[in-house]
Length: 87
Image 1 (cartoon, rainbow, N blue to C red):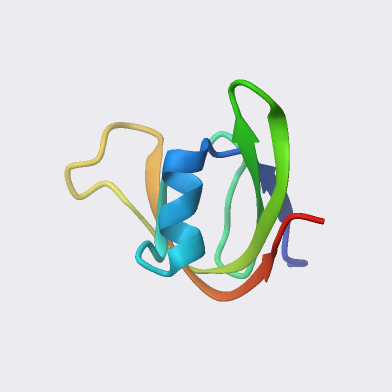
Image 2 (cartoon, rainbow, N blue to C red):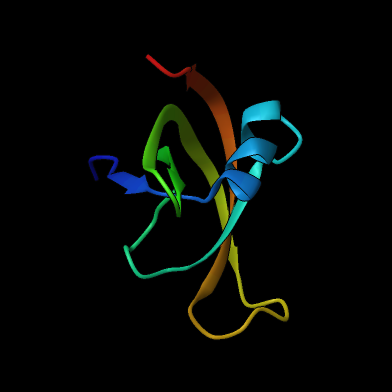
């Protein structure tokens, strides 16, 4: 199967943890059919000003579900980060 591509718009307080490298996973409802090998583009979204211009592209390396998670929730392990600062 061909890897998927998904755009996500996290708020700054969540985006910053991925940007700094402190967070290498994503907990989400699996509403997009995420798979290992997919690319995720995080576009920082401010509730006040909209998109900030900062972006992160990462590869999903592993997905887990169940194990005490609510139905339809998954945890995705991320790697190969590409950071795009504001223009």
